[in-house]
Amino acid sequence: MTIRLILFSLTLLFGLVAFEQAQAQSKKKNKNKNKKEINQDLENPGSLIEINENTKSVAGETSDIAPKQILAEQSLIEGMKWYMLEEYTKATAAFEAALKIDDKNDAACYQLALCYFRLGEPRSALPHAEMAAKIKNENIYYLQLLASVYQDLSDNANAEKTWRTLIQKQPRNDEYYHSLADLLRQAGKTKDAIKVYDQAEAIIGPDDEMIRKKQDIYLNAGNLDAALKEGQKLIDAFPDFPDYMLMQAELMLNNRRVEDGKTIIQKYLNSGFSHPYAYLMLADIAANENDNAAQFKYLQMAFEDRDLNPEQKVRILLTNYYEQAERNNSLREQGLNLSQAAAKAHPESADLLALHGDFLYISQKQEEALSIYLQSVAINPDNFRVWERILQIDWNASQTDKLVEHGAKATDLFPNQALAWFYYGMGLSEAQKNDEALEALEQGRALAVNNKELISNFEALIGDLYHQTKDYPKSDRAYEAALTANPNNARALNNYSYYLALRKENLNFAQQMSIKLVRLYPNDANYLDTHAWVLYVLGSYEQARTYMEKAIALGSPSATLLEHYGDILFKLGNVEAALSQWIKALQIDTDNQALEQKIKNKRLE
Figure 1 (cartoon, rainbow, N blue to C red):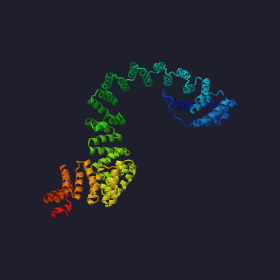
Figure 2: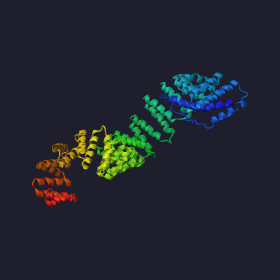
Figure 3: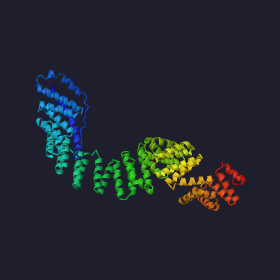
Figure 4: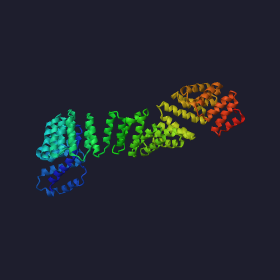
């Protein structure tokens, strides 16, 4: 093989790869240009080795080549080396050097044009691309580059002419038809584009992409019948691909041919085919006809099918069910059933599992929801919203051990989430791990910088913990900070007023807080008990009895409430009634030795 032949083959090999990449890059500039690319492997083991091996024997093989040609070829080899390294500026200098030696070297012209094209300089590429095509006008790669350069320069007339030349040379290459038709569409010559698609169809047969583009042209022109006729071509040409029937039905439904669309969908299903989109379309039709039962039936079929991707199922559930589930029992039940079907079909989808957990949660099935949420975070532990629900359920169910366990995991995963620290702190507090609880709550409090309600809740809990350790100044400051952030914080109002009463300190302020508390929550037995106890400490026994009896009337009184009621009755002189209440309290709180002593001695102390 002579050096000339080696270089020519390399020019075609690397030049074609590079040109196609450059062409694809250029086409991105215009959405209407052809999007298809021929994927080539830029790594071609042996190619550069071949160059090196053959250049070693140039002197022995090129005795018949003029010295200037040898120099030109050497510059070309140098240019190809830089080109393959994507050093286009250096490659350009080498190719220009080759052309200065041999200005008729078509390979150098082509490569130089390609370099400029890659550098985003189509105007500089043009004369070299034209020269390459002029020297060897039978070379299709030269013509492809030339057409793309014309197109990049908006020289549509010459681009069209060049693409038509390529079609004449290779009439079965569908890419040329696509490129020409896209150019014509961009120029507004839609009728000419249709003719190109028809020409291609006559030679190479129906093509899905071309027919789709023809349908777009017809639809933009308001010619639905012509677009449907094109869709029927696909159905007839590819009977083994029944999804074309669904595409045709979708086109009908989108253009208000509802009955025609239903007919073709039923024909598809009656033929033994099954696809979740068929059921989705029927569900959409049913929704438009206000047939909720039919809509749910078809959605259930679609959701049981794994071919409908999890993301789409999530979107349908969120849009059509979840937002209304809390206030609409029927939609909540349907959403629960659909999310269950989806989660069963996609047990690997953390998002679907989380959403199914949400429907269980708002359906008051918290234990089942917890199980599903835990499955979700086992797959994807990085969803804080799910962890928040897990912690809420643990707290609502008084599962202290689980709250501590899950709180520890949540704070490890989300150390900057104040709410995770809040739940963790509550769990530790309930577990009587006061020092750890305080540390967790202080950590979370520092993170909740702009959330006044959360700050207030943190401070209220911190106040409780400092009270338990009998650090009353810190406890009071924490409660006051809680009420500054949220004056209506029920926990702070309740506990602060109650603990002040126990300590017999600042009783007027305690009374103000307890009055506010029962105004905000007139039917909460614990808060009524707190207000009654403040009144009791103040000596207002009759008022205290009134509020305590309201609390008892709400049902299921606690041992503390009954004991307090007995204390009030004792102060009012009704010892037997007081003993009766104390005995009831002891039946609930059987280990209360102080209460036993009251009963035994028939007195408060």
